[in-house]
Image (cartoon, rainbow, N blue to C red):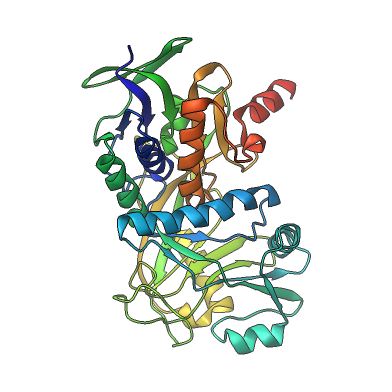
Length: 387
């Protein structure tokens, strides 16, 4: 008999949520992480993550996001911790660019509340931002941000309260699977379970054995001192501000994003959303890229001048990028007892709550009522084989 129903390799955003959802259903769960929980060396580093429904990346994500919002609120009620804040999200970019066009497409298809603003309206309503001529602005009132560390702590704490065994500093070294179940080896022993969930973030390329080129990159972000009250929210002791999170497409197609002061940091956090330099998660340089910080600072001077004060500090986290920029989520193509969860490519954290529910479904029954087929690992395997 297997000692556990499910073993989780990784207790970050998706892993902590899966541990909670599995344990509350009565499953025997062992969750293992190579670092601390939360782990500041992992993909969720940097305090805050954006959440939004008008998903320009693909409208098929929207049903998952709708459920994710419900589950984030459920987590807050169950844990007594505030993790989701909704000051809204301001989008701006060329009218026919992917950010504006894709956001409007998702909003129209799923009847989402998104306000279209002229340059004059955006300037009057959000005076801390500059909307260039020919660009279009949108405002999504339900958008906002999540406190990443708080969300992971809450999920992990509730998982333990429901009976899960959660262990820090115990990385999975090897695993094997057959028709009867799985075995997992760590430095502390060998464990058996009915199924295994691989959700190890930047360590997925070697751990998952998918034969799919998942590329790990280092991502730089920084906090800047606000220069004007328009983008300077309440003191950092107050976690909710009157100013929105923002995402802006520049003329060259680059996408920048940021958070108002007080949203998990002492200043305005900003970054560029683009895969950075490739890195090894076991021996990465954790130093932020100076050139990237300056590029973000230059954007702020042009487009968010109220936030373009001195840099306060900078940091880096890791992205795990799939070939097409979409998540890799579903049953392992070669192992029926193994589930793969790499909801990354730099836009996965907001989905963690619903990913936990999906992973619990897949682990216990092999299917889920949520529409995740478009994220299956098989899509990339087939594409690579054909090409």
